[in-house]
Length: 246
Image (cartoon, rainbow, N blue to C red; front, side, top):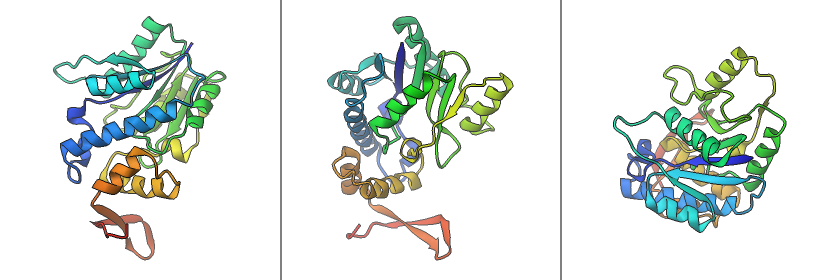
């Protein structure tokens, strides 16, 4: 039994690092646009026994039902749980309530991800203990598959080491041998900071994803664009006001 698990942060605190370029209401609208795109992508994925969306907000859970996904309401706590604790709780739900024998975690902000990425990861997980797709900008994790689901902990909340590196370091300490690194630009691109948001708009355009709600939302609401800081440096950008031609 293989389950795809998608935790979605409460809308009141979604993508808080982007509040210097989009308002809280705009970030909520962006989150809903991203979820609709993800729902459409997942409608073409049929090799999981179930797909679970875990969120506190009824808006997201109602959309999950619209796309024939399993919606489970997250109970918020004080103090707020770490992301690793949220992952742990959802993973346990999959094990205890759905008898999951493999779990794959994916996240809402991988806006370029395609249905084939989900299909390929699940196929890899059948033959491996751990399948991980590194986030291309941060040495984080954009997709995580575990077989069985509790074979190793997650390290998203590690204070010192990026989650991808921490995960592999601990996998080696545990002497896990069947590890697959899923190397994919589209699955590995995620939105975390302002620069990612601006790159996402350009990548969606270049990949001809013009009909996605995320692209259309950014086209209508994003008032910034990226420029190289200097002619010889492709790694540093300056953020400027968006030109009409963009």
